[in-house]
Image (cartoon, rainbow, N blue to C red):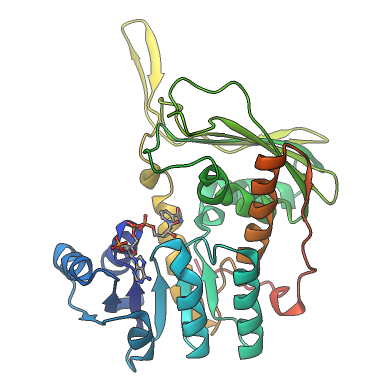
Length: 344
Ligand code: NAP
């Protein structure tokens, strides 16, 4: 079976996902698109050489008989409404992060999906498909370094544009760590605190950068994430897990080493898109294969989207208060407890 996909939002990531479906992935094709800006949808199809129907809005695209699954790649605040419409129509939906911009919005999606009675939603937290993080997960599951005690992580971008604000360090940037570390440790977050070191000269006046986020889990693991979005030197993702019997770290991105003119050097990526290309391919391939083979998406669920939103809200509160803020999550419903085996 070929999954016929309709795309809502033909901006940067929408086009990338359309291109990977058409060029690299198996079992799916793009048959429909829509965007608030119709010209953008037309241009995207032309640029990518894809023939698909352009619909005036998300509802008409979702209602189309020949659309089996929806990609939601529009602006974050528009995600919730489109996902709810897709669930109401009983269609599978892959939604880029954030699932919704509020925890209540995520919970409304969770409730709608549970009422529907079958999992339909996968959220675009691609890092759990990255081979480095998968190796870390296997190491933890095999108890390679004993119980984890402390994590030291960093999310560094070379620079951001003037539209990037202090809160986006949490809602746009840290959100990936929030999801992937929860998945790695399989442990609930219980508190968050945000500390501001001396501000870098490279940040615009309105932006607090860098930021140090401290998360604590139910079993007592402490997590420190440095978010630096004007580090200049590259796009650099670090994760070191200090365990009882040793330390395990995320591998560096593979790159040749050069010995020349008295120096031993290796490249650091500067473009975030290149860091997780394989992971983006795998998350979408898993979505396509799992809905075809298992009838449910195997990747990050609407519940994961809710956990990320609640944690993100606590971090945002901590940014304002300077205090350690509690993270109060409802217990995971049985509906989301099932472990669905990835199909990639
Ligand atoms: P973008 O380039 O601004 O694209 C968003 C597109 O959606 C634009 O074409 C926008 O039109 C359109 N749009 C806005 N509201 C809409 C609506 N109500 N219905 C249909 N289309 C609508 O942004 P992007 O970088 O692609 O990001 C899109 C989403 O993906 C964001 O939520 C972002 O957080 C997420 N994302 C995730 C990752 C990841 O690593 N997983 C990476 C990048 C982005 P206008 O331009 O006319 O407003």
